[in-house]
Image (cartoon, rainbow, N blue to C red; front, side, top):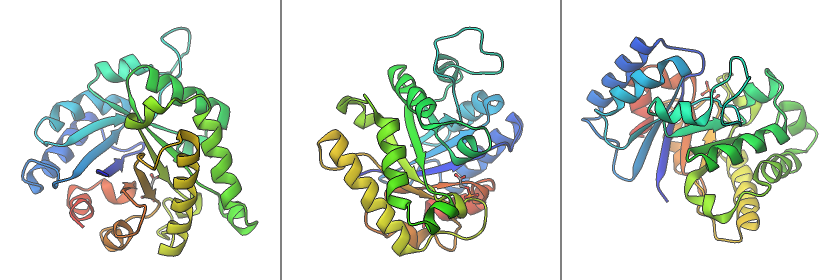
Amino acid sequence: MRRLMAANWKMYKTSEEAAATIEHLSKLLGGSAPAGSEILVFAPFTALEAAAAAMRSLQGGYIGAQNMYPAENGAFTGEISPDMIRAAGASWVLVGHSERRHLLGENDEFIGNKLRFALEKGLDVMLCVGETLQERENGEVSAVLERQLSRALTEVPETAIAHLAVAYEPVWAIGTGRSAGPEDIMKAHTLAANLLEKHFGRVREVPLLYGGSVKPENAATILALDNVDGVLVGGASLQAESFTKIVTA
Ligand code: PGA
């Protein structure tokens, strides 16, 4: 399984700042991602083109968008289509990030529509799933993961496997400085792995990432866990130095 080391820059960085950070990252890594790893940077829409141009200096590095709208084109003010994302030089898109679910009100059905449409249009998709603190305290982790995954993957064919990754991001661990512990991560990843295996009828081939307060200090421990094929990093990915420490952990 290839290892995916992903940066989610959220609403940070102008195009100039994005390009500078990627150039710095490339320099620190000697121009290529570590063997067996791919580096993904999910940049803001306005920085996609500059980030993609800068990413040419980093072998094994790819650019993704943080969102898209599931239509070819049309009267959708403020939205961006998969074709626009690809034309800007990005090949990935994040779907179902908890900030979009909880702050922007996206539901499982809409997330499923996005996922299918993005795949159809040739983008690679990183689907984010994860429970809130309340859901965890109610003992609903497995029900939440099952619901989010099965609704998002409805009618997603086996051929999508090569273009899909899943990030387990417990909502209570995102941006809080409090990462999930190894046991919780392993449990959730085993659940997700089983659900993916059941859905596709194949032994697990979809990379499973953990996200939520990943830092240089905890990255190695998390990456060493069974069923963890990479990390999705917010805050600690904004500086090239700290993201490099995570990528090489
Ligand atoms: P964080 O964000 O690393 O800042 O917790 C992770 C994410 O939202 O993907």
